[in-house]
Image 1: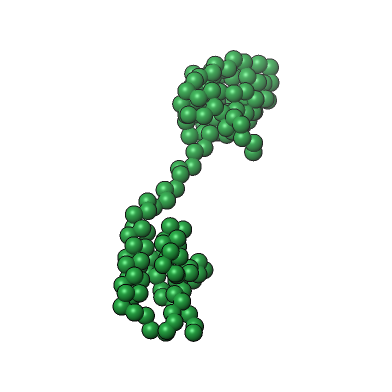
Image 2: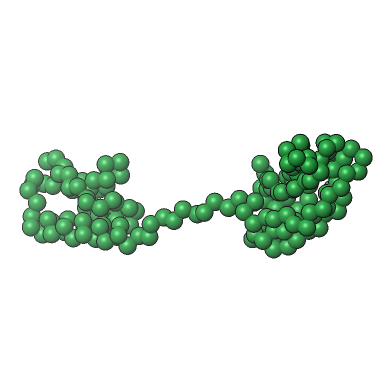
Length: 173
């Protein structure tokens, strides 16, 4: 007058639980066991055959389910590039012009541009970062003229710029 537990060898999903319930088995999802109301305490050959068939079906169902595929993480920077960079000193300021290219499937916005300046000796003498509050649509380029990058070191002889950060349009943070 008790319950006899039958361990289901395969993990029990919703479909398998419905099949088990159809033949009088209840599923304990935390232990992944099926509980068969066994009165008398001994199972008949037919009941044992049903359980073996259910175990086999559960294994086949588990093996037939595709493994979950982790979606690759896409970052706004993955498909961004900066090219045709020209720069000049205008008083004490670094002013840059460049082309931003977005080869990705999503529009990006608020691009952080960083320019690193070095002296004639090759020593880095300054880093300037500014955010371009604009949108670059998917699969397009945008030309930016005379973008003020801030104060430049008086001994800067060369400067190289890159896109350092951006956000997808429609997403915050």
